[in-house]
Length: 79
Image 1 (tube, rainbow, N blue to C red):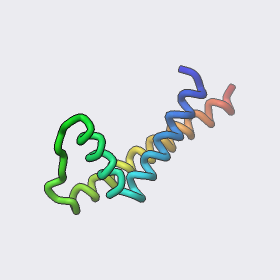
Image 2 (image 1 turned 120 degrees about the horizontal axis):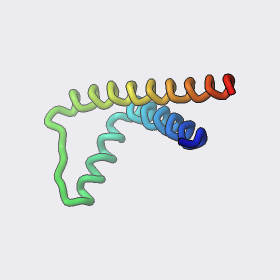
Image 3 (image 1 turned 120 degrees about the vertical axis):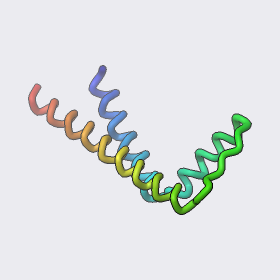
């Protein structure tokens, strides 16, 4: 895979993860809006739990994105 694609995926992971952590409710609302467009009704049973889970998953996406970028940067130094 091209290095540009890998770096782009890493940056996208950092941005999406940060968005999910910082604006959890907005991220959930975007997901609900998407499902409404494909004729599905989606609603959390517990908003409190859903926001916590969204923050946790967003954090992991953020960390994975950071590791991808770190690996990319280290591979540039080796070459």
